[in-house]
Amino acid sequence: MKFDGAGIAIVGSGSATPQAVVRNDDLSQLVDTSDEWIRARTGIRNRHLLGENSSLSELAAMAASKAIAAADISPEAIDLVLLATSTPDDLFGSAAKVQALIGAKNAVAFDLTAACSGFVFGLVTAAQYLRTGAFQNIVVIGADVLSRWVDWGDRNTCVLFGDGAGAVVCQRSSQDQLLGFEMYSDGSRNDCLNLSYQEKPKYLINDVSIQKGDYQAISMNGREVYRFAVAKVPEVVEKTLFRANLTAADVDWLVLHQANQRIIDAVAKRLKLPAEKVIANLHEYGNTSAASIPLALDEAVIAGKIKTGDLVVTSGFGAGLSWGSAIFRWGTVD
Image 1 (spheres, rainbow, N blue to C red):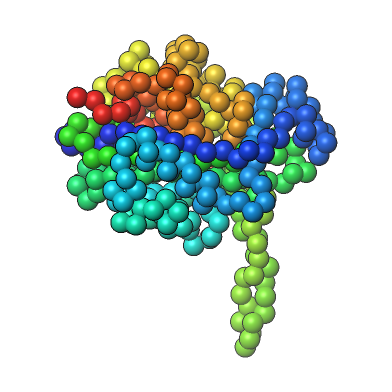
Image 2 (image 1 turned 90 degrees about the vertical axis):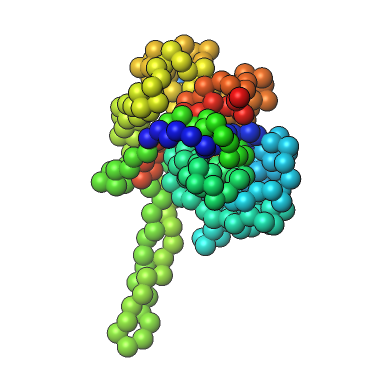
């Protein structure tokens, strides 16, 4: 969809990653794998993992605080803290804890769960509040600690995931810089990638039994997820460009969910975008789920690649299955 008139500008970014780094060769001590095997299939070399006595809320707060500082506003000016995560510290949600940690005492806070599509879905959700005039400043955070839910004995999944957080500050603007978006879900393919609850019946009283179980480790059909991503991501990006009356030639930067380098390369090739327009950092962080797009975006801004006025295309895709795309100009553009 595309809207005209007052809307959203993205005016600051921030990111945070744990200090502990696990390299591909390190994983060969846990499972039958090697640096060459992992890099050839995924492009990943390292992943950062959250250690003991640390929390997702703290990681998310660190990224949010950096984004707020970059936007040159005070935490008290934030109206909404929107946390996109599938791995909260608290099953009831962690956004309120983040709100307290960053000092956004005037903000409402809530979690949004859409796995690897979470940041794109969160960005689009934030835009609706800004376009209606309900809020003036929103911090959108993508943060996940998937190391909590990885089976470290499964070489097909444990090599893929890392932990991290990224955030942007979205501000109401007279010139709408979110030029278009598309979002989709296909629940019939949910079993291709999930982190499911496994019930264990527990007898309670008077012939009443309840469920008393736990969540299982991440389960993924890698081949099907790859096929899904290579087919759907270029399609959704092309559709978003069309609805925004843009073409691939107008794109300055492509920032995809950092799941697999082969997927990123395939999408760029389909869109006929040269490698120098593609932002990728999964070699260092692996798949950080909802954090991957804002983390890559922030690093590119810090490096001076993404500049005010640049046209950025993003696309998130993953569990649900869900996928979406958002196109925006970076910064406040007159």
